[in-house]
Length: 271
Image 1: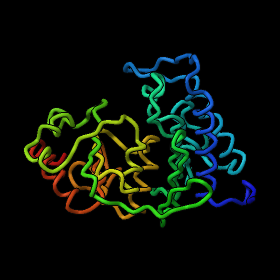
Image 2: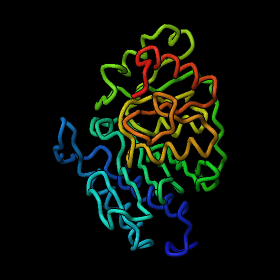
Image 3: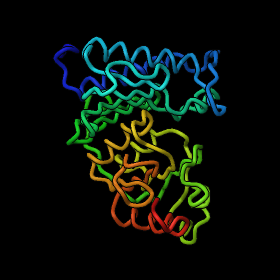
Image 4: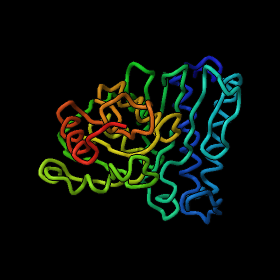
């Protein structure tokens, strides 16, 4: 087995995500204390323990790298060239009510781009990962190339706040857009595991509002989709991370254009 110090960044991302996923799985169904955050959000003891497990892996192997954790915040130099973005339990509310739709996200940003990432499904036993070039899923000891497909017609729409593009765009209104029900079937899973599913061909697309710059929630999923060949932009068709423009990640160009047209019918002018 390759030691952590000599592991590639992608291998390290997978190990870190798996370490967090093991904690999430082990603590599932137990009585969990909560830490209240702003806007009605909260973290559980599992969020905190999973983040510690992820950070232990990263800091052991890459002690000089900076880290941004959802629960622990920023560490390392502010302008660090290498920064890990860690979301130890995406789908905390799901998890707190014993819903297994959650993910552990780990991504490495080098300069302005994400060069390695992993998104682990603690209960499905899968880790979706990328080295910035290839996108694969690891399960049962082997890796399989991810292959996006619009065939399912399933589109996940994130309805959670904040909504920086409101009132021009509200994700909930997309579900009532003319043509949406004719072409797609909506899903709301409240975890960015669904972004990885777009890369894997299990979802046709994913749509959310929000400011995704330095997002611990979305960095891994976006990197997976881009490496898999998906079409990934903000809500106005611009590159992701360019502002508070949200996200459209689609399996193919036709799906992306259809969703972009529906979004533009709400917010015709880019901000």
